[in-house]
Every structure is written in structure tokens, then in C-alpha cells.
Image (cartoon, rainbow, N blue to C red; front, side, top):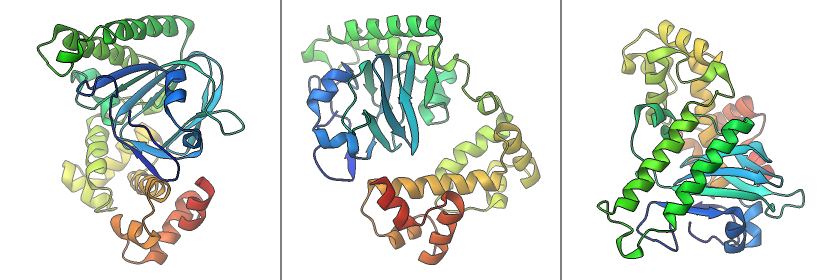
Length: 299
């Protein structure tokens, strides 16, 4: 991961300092603490890679898309590309002293498996509290990845023909399969809730949230009636299609307000609002904050 410095906002591009051509990095949280400057714990960042954090000991509080995440033993966090985060910190704002393992990987490194697609595409949970059995199994699996990672020949780190690189891909795929079979923290939001209609809607929403907030248009694009779409959304989440569309737009607005210095009016235009006042009213309705107030509060 690239070293980041002072100031906000921060985008973090994937960069493995030890094996620059390898799309995976395994390190401890203590190594991360030594690598990064002290100001980073207070700074919102938006990585372009996946992060798995398994906590073995210690405590702290992270933030993923503006939701506080308690970090304690047997907690697992998955931060996906494009999400806004703050690294686990103690109550003083300093990076927490965690005994934890981190696996960082690019979107293209793991094998694409049907059961892990929702996790990799951004539709899985961000956090789990693992049972003792699941924790021990996952800790062993990550330890195996770490052991293989440290045997990669630096001269062949980017070569798909290298059997160790291929083994790392498959071991990571196995870890993701373990995550896919964990009980969903919110059973109503599991991968099967809402059926094919809801799955198609989620993908179309990711593609089009900045272009349209019309339920009718989404229904046409995925080939279902608006009423069918709304029923599927309610079955999956308890919310209507319109509520989910507005929530996705509000989330992107929050991300842009915190991780960029774009003017509020420019962010509104990016998300399809022709007038800044309409964007401001929308965000107040969805989050309870004005755009400027939200930006100031988060920073």
C-alpha cells in the first residue's frame, strides 16, 4: 500500500512496496502502523483495493462508509475498493495497537468464483464477529497465505506461471469462500434475499445511480415492472426501490464530500442535481446534515 502523508483527503492506490508486481500483500497491523504517518488515523481515505483485517488482540474503532466498526478479538473487517474508511484508532485518535493481520489485494488478483462474486463486487457484509471455530479456521487460512506470500520469488512475483503466485490466488479464493458461507450479520440482506430481480437491480444501481433516480427507468433497464422491482427490494432489505436509490446517491455524496475537495455544487452536478439547493435539501432529508455541515463534521 502506498505511504500516505498529512492532510485530507487521501486516496490510496494499491502499491506493494516489497513486491511491486504482485497483486496481494500480507502484513501485520503493527507493520502498517510503522509505515504510516500519525495523521493518517484522523484522515478519511478511499483505497482502490480490497482489505481484509482479522483482529487477534487489542481494541480500536475503525470507520467504513461512515459506520463505526469496533475492532476487537475475533472481529473481521472487509473494506472494498471505493469505500471511505478511517483506520482503527484508539480513543485519542492515534492508530490503535492491534494484534491483527491484513491481507490487501487488487480486484483482479483472486479467482472469480460464483459464490464470492457478491463479496468482491461490493454486496457482502463489511464486518463479522466470528465464532471461535470460524475464527480459528480463518486465522489458520490467513497464516498459510502469509507463509506462502513470504516465499514468492521477487524475480517472478508478477508471473502467472509462477506456481507460488497461482497458489496464493487459490488460497485467497478459499478464504473468500469461507467468508461467503459465514452467516450474514443481517439475514434479510443475504445474497438470496429478493432473488434475481434484486440482484439485477443492485448491479444496475451501481452503474447508473449518478444518471437517474427513477424507479421506472431502473425497472425498464432490468426488464421488470416497477411494482415487481419494489416488491423484490422490500423482500431483500425492507426498503423500497426508491429508498435504496436515494440511499446509494446519498452515500456517494458523503464519500465525495469527505474524500475530495470538490465544491458542493460540483458534487451535486456529478450526482445529477441541476441546482445546489436541490442537492442540499436531498442530503438533509437523507442524512440530517447539509453538505457543508457533513464535510466539516467528518473532517
